[in-house]
Image (cartoon, rainbow, N blue to C red; front, side, top):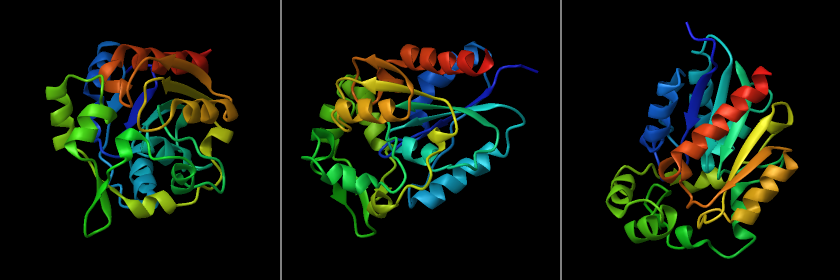
Length: 231
């Protein structure tokens, strides 16, 4: 049995677990056990419940990695994070207590990737293909980006109004990757999230999906978190 921590990968909005495929393969090559579950994104509570379901299946130390809205999910573990020893944020929301994604998004102009959300009759938001390929995943091969668009997981707009409780990053060490070419979450917002959580921070020249376009750097940051909690 490996002494390495297990890695749980949490996808964000307009993605699914398959967005981690390259990262999963590289972590497997290094001997890690990995889980990348699917999240309903119908509410923050439902997503956190899914994450806790997965975490309780782990038998030892676990590092949780969140991308984009997945950062909201891992942050909302609050102080109930079974087996979790570290948090890794990949171009992700890192809210503080009392904040909502909706209020943060509304505080500035719409980002290019999110400027034309297509909201269906059930209140779930989808990204149009042009915005997905041209802005959300701008540094991904267009053919692959179109596949990612086809499997996108829409998010309920109600989740943008869910208020953060005590954030998990106040109790757990954190690592953060800023995507400097992000057109979904502004890079300066990512830097602010990272700074106030006291995260060990790296920056990569990437679109909003560095786990797809820059998997080696994402794996390196995860392994930095492993080293940080193992030392």
